[in-house]
Length: 89
Image 1 (cartoon, rainbow, N blue to C red):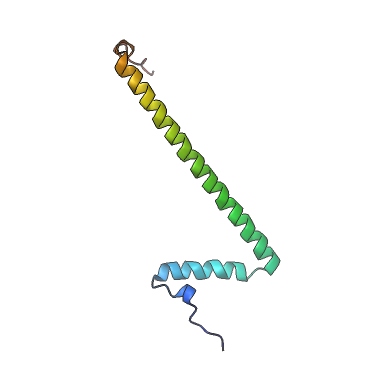
Image 2 (cartoon, rainbow, N blue to C red; image 1 turned 120 degrees about the horizontal axis):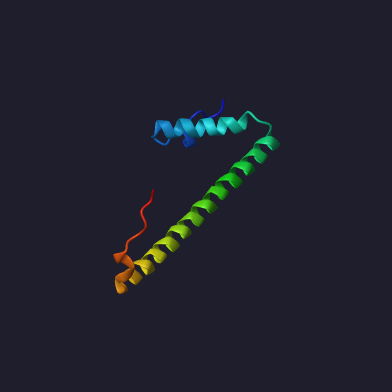
């Protein structure tokens, strides 16, 4: 009889254990080649999400740097802030 106490499903957190089992079982019900292709697709998807997150972090850093430059320019030349921005209607 196979060992029924796989350490992957006995981490002490029942929610994580159940999710890991469901994930493993979802691949196990598929033919091996289909499961591998689906796994590659999922890895590519999460790699794209990671790329987008990295890009978004770069955009935030660039915006913060631009905001610092703009704030410094406003501080040096207060006449540009006296008029204020145009009202949005």
